Length: 217
Image 1 (cartoon, helix red, strand yellow):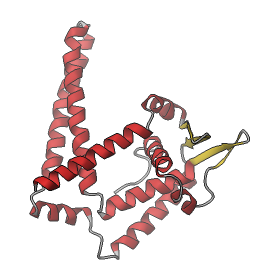
Image 2 (cartoon, rainbow, N blue to C red):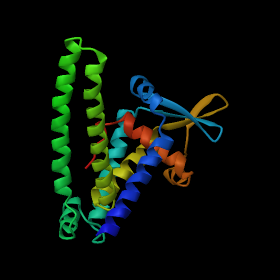
Image 3 (cartoon, rainbow, N blue to C red):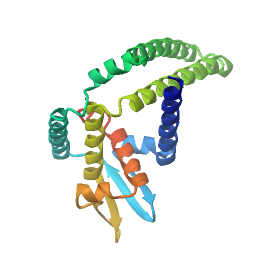
Image 4 (cartoon, rainbow, N blue to C red):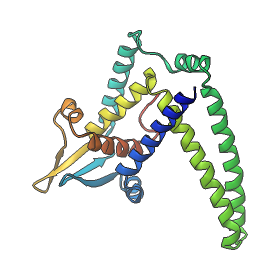
């Protein structure tokens, strides 16, 4: 059991490290406000843009197709079945969900108190403890989300979501050639054959740009 926990913790740290390497957090505001983000990779300028309605529809069709295909394969488990299997082995994902919700409730109370203190024009020394505690709660929630992501990585729902965002990233990424923006990849296969860091970068930007817009399981 301890060996499994150590392995999961190691995978969580790998995910955190990967996110920090490929996402320029200073550009997130630009991405959300301008519906696009530009970055350089291996001396090539890339741009990830918000998808059109037609592109969203194409991704949704691919998502359904992938889900149906995996559902027919007995090697893959649905998330609810995987959660039951983990519980038999002493890993309680439902308890993780409850813990996350409890942290969210604590955070909401602190945010309310912080807002009240700001409204009352309290000095910075009175505000900072609220911010520090909220930051700690955010970190704890991130750990839960990443731990669940590692545990449920093999579920049908997770595999379909990864595929959906990968396909979306392929559709909405452009590159600059002779000062003109063109589609970054001609085919999805050529996208998959690109360097892993580039793929991870565009997928993460695509997921940030289209949060709550693309159907996921």
